[in-house]
Amino acid sequence: MSNRSIALISRQMPFIYGIFPFIMIGLSLLMISSTPYAAFKQKGFLKINSVSGIIAIVSLISLIIAYPENSLFVFFLIYAVSGIIVGIYKSLFPKKIEDQN
Image 1 (cartoon, one colour):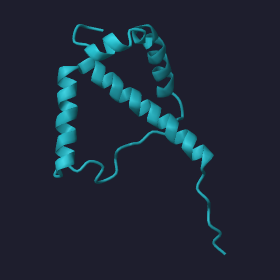
Image 2 (spheres, one colour):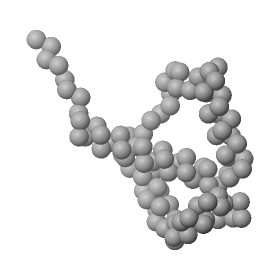
Image 3 (cartoon, helix red, strand yellow):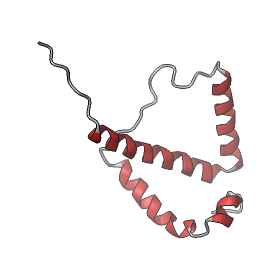
Image 4 (cartoon, helix red, strand yellow):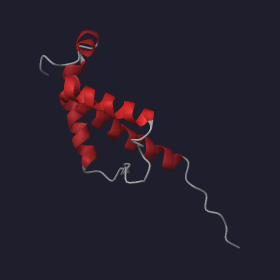
């Protein structure tokens, strides 16, 4: 981590620097797994012409500019964990197929 790291994480959770290599190995293994992930191809995922869409985009860009390595790491970590959560949810609660008769 560089000196541009998020100071709150540095002070509150100093142990996190020791587990970064394990998190990175876990993320790299998830990249080659068959875990389902969102594709973000659907229309209307983030409407830029809405106020909330503009605020979300400006906030995301601001975080990436201020803390590039931290914000991208957190974004991809959340993306990887979301795939695991969706996969577990789909296996626990499968869609019921209605009888066509």
